[in-house]
Image (cartoon, rainbow, N blue to C red; front, side, top):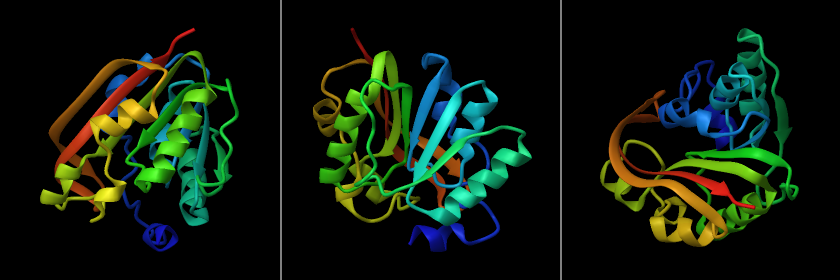
Length: 196
């Protein structure tokens, strides 16, 4: 599905970063950032332009090829890893920051990936997330039709156990990101830090 979505010459979700990330990225310590389900590179390229060392992982080779092109257009380098998140190992104590921007994983897999992400953060590392909540199904402006791939406060508290929540909010906002995320969106936004 994702290879097909990214096959178009246009960028499915645009070339600009997610607005929550663009507003809040400074909360992450300068250093190594892991972007989960990065897609076509818009968020990784943005962070690289801010001086971060970014590794982008995605299951779509087509998306990552476009990420490589976008990085070159912007004069930055990002590390690209083609991998299914079900099989990708997040090494313990490695990352200064991990971002998950609209990463629509089924509940069981999402829980496993996020628990690995908690272990993968260094002390003081930050997990930054924006995801659709189940209320998004009423809007139909992105995120698919499966409630199982939506994120709730309850699941976040469970999946990110061990992190200190600096910011956690469920909001409705206009999400304008390419042709697949356009319109009113019901989202959850999270910034959480790993304490020593």
